[in-house]
Amino acid sequence: MGVEEIEKIKESAFKFKAFLEKNPNKRLIRIFTHIDTDGLTSGAIFIKMLERMKESFWITPLKQLERKKVSELIDETLKQEWKAVIFLDLGSNALDLIEKIPAFTLVIDHHQFENLPVEKTIFINPSHKEEKVDISAAGLTYLFCKYVDSRNEDLAQLAILGLIGDVIEPSSDKLCNEIIEDAKKQGMQIKKGPIIFSSMRPLHKALEFSSSIFIPGVTGNFSGVVALLREAGIEYKQGNSYKSLFDLNKDEMSRLMTAILLRRIRDGHSSDIIGNIYLIKLFGRLEDARELSAVVNACGRLNYGDIALSFLVGARKAKYISQEVYDKYKINIIRGLNYAENCEKIRGDGYIIINAKDNIKDTMIGTIISIIASSSIYPKGTILVGMAYQGEDKIKISSRVSGRDNNINLADLIKSVIKTSGGDFGGHAQAAGAVIPRDKEALFIELLERELKMTEMSIKI
Image (tube, rainbow, N blue to C red; front, side):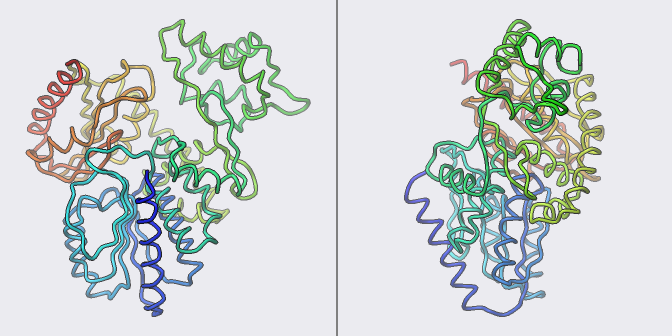
């Protein structure tokens, strides 16, 4: 991302700050954010900034921002006399309606969008139809808030949490690098190793119960874990306590990774298991960012977004409640994965469609598809589309691609289908979704299969 985009974020931050200084009244600032980790961390960063500025606010996490909702906000804003209306991790595909809201409006998003004229709304989104940008809404929100007030630098670790939640690896991009350096100042640590939940739990438990990396003969098998560690020459006990993944020295980590890779490659699984382990400091202790991301996401998906926001801004009691929600969430995940494994699927050359109907929650279908995509169940590059009923008259659509690093743009794929079937679209190249009318179910599948076949043909060419 270039200097031009950085300057735009700074300019937007200065405009927002100037607006608040010119309007010191106590009217509410209305905020809408997405229910996933990226959206909730964006919300937490933003409200922490507003608290420091002594501004009053009301924040609501949303599954998606439907155009109907934005239309209703136009009248609602007039009635409630809100000072400003803010959209985080959503809003890019409703800019024409957001422009009509009779208040100061700000959209911070990273999902792909069609170029539309924006006159009144402050719009921050470096993604374009033709361009893939590796930064999340939380990253953009953090930079915006930091440029409003440098005191907000202490929120950098929340931005890292949002990046990881959206499966965006913090890169050497200028903006991401700025966030990483700020997060390190606040206590974040980074180490190379196998991406296993959780790097801070006892090593033998992390290996046995790892859901992020399947290790043949080890996952779900304690004796297999002991054999693996013995083969790698690693003692998992350390006096009266147990070693964690993060406790391993460089040599031990290297031997462990080799032992895991040998088992995976021998059984035909991907060797793509190594990455950065991020430990962020919350409540005075280091915790695995990937696991924290999963906890926050669980709260959002089970309609406990308010608990996640409280936890992220420092409420210790909310942290314990969020862990209980996460435990409940994991049960739902297991049920969803079992259904996805055993249900009848629509299969084609390079794609799988899982139409769960009412067997998987609409808030869970994206997570289920993401887990399947990150596993080695299907060949790398397989397009996975999940469908689940939402309420009485809608269907939630989620799409991902198996494996990392691919040239398939899911946003373009889903958007092209939605143009004909109808519905609300959202997403980016790596993860895209939609909400469609339930009576368009058969039409959507027909159009989707047609597009998937064309996509597969273009890849082969």
